[in-house]
Image (cartoon, rainbow, N blue to C red; front, top):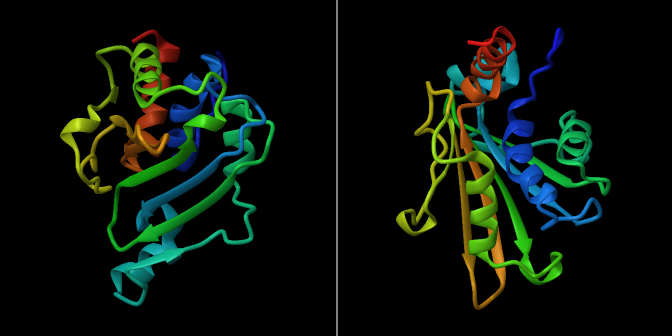
Length: 194
């Protein structure tokens, strides 16, 4: 393409989780979706960076509580959601890193998929190599947002409770790497055939 737009950082995580499941028909355009996310403060611009670096900002805060965040239309368009998701972003007292999480009631999804089904669809979509990888949920008891800072990688996780028929999808990325400049460089490489 001659012109390519880069997704926002929150949108990168949400779309990476939702679109493959939508394409596999494990979600429908009308599936109710809630997205929770936390980002490092560098994604908030100069004023927010100054507040955090001067130690005048809280260690954690929710924002966008009017439920009209600028990334919602982008998330809807590229994940093919027709029903507006509830999106609750937050910011933490760390410079870079991000977690985007989406809880799901498995019995409310088409075909009533298992946690393994969700994982298999994501793994098949992204393949075994590249900058996007599906991590094994068994190896992880907790997630923190900063471990991919300075990286252009995107790590996807599917956690769940088979007995309760619940799952949570999580994308981990660097809000300035894969979520911004790193994505721009990767798109430029694709455009140039590199």
